[in-house]
Length: 289
Image (cartoon, helix red, strand yellow):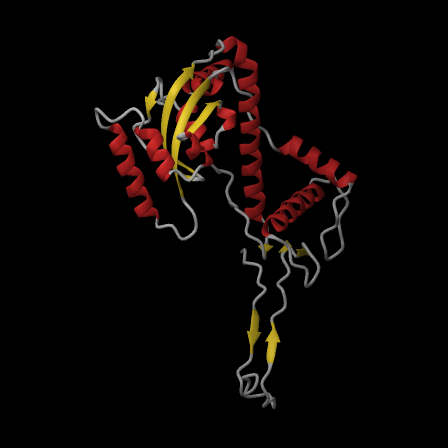
């Protein structure tokens, strides 16, 4: 049903266009026209207009919703060939459509409590760590396996009993690709908001995150590379009681539920539509998980 937007150029053979029915004998090159993406025959862009994938998907979703609003009697029927630019009336009709057709359950107190119990580290406030690290940066052209072996070897050395107290700082100065190497890898005091998400998850937000000071027993992977991490000091912070957080958790779960319901609704619309020239996730059954 869907096909990739094509901008490829076709070149005829050097002896002609390749057709036995054609008298062309000279070299020729023919540019294939840009395919026009469409939803149920309504074009999403002008001929020759090239859009990035995200913009094209957004236009396709808007057009799917506009057409559904027409079917629901919320908008007049459209007779043009190109999708109209959504105006205030269209946006209002789409909002009314979603309010009428997309429903999600409100989370109850028990569901909120289960979420609280399962994600307690995420709700701690005032926590901070005094951390130092050694970064083995993953950059273009760097052999990742060899880099990982070097990082593992350094971690193993630092994990041995009797290792010198200043060995971490020495290795940071020799091996780390972070500017903090000049300070022995010392990053100072950090909070979850100061870290790359991967570091925050490993150091703060997992139930099995470090609970004391010391060397992290495993390499920590982040978008920057591989980290050897040592916690020098810990400020524990405070976990608010569930009653303090119930409203916040309920609002968060409600947003997640609404997003899931909207995604499933859009999948159904895609599955029931003729979509060409743009990749959209769809389903042709209401039993979308």
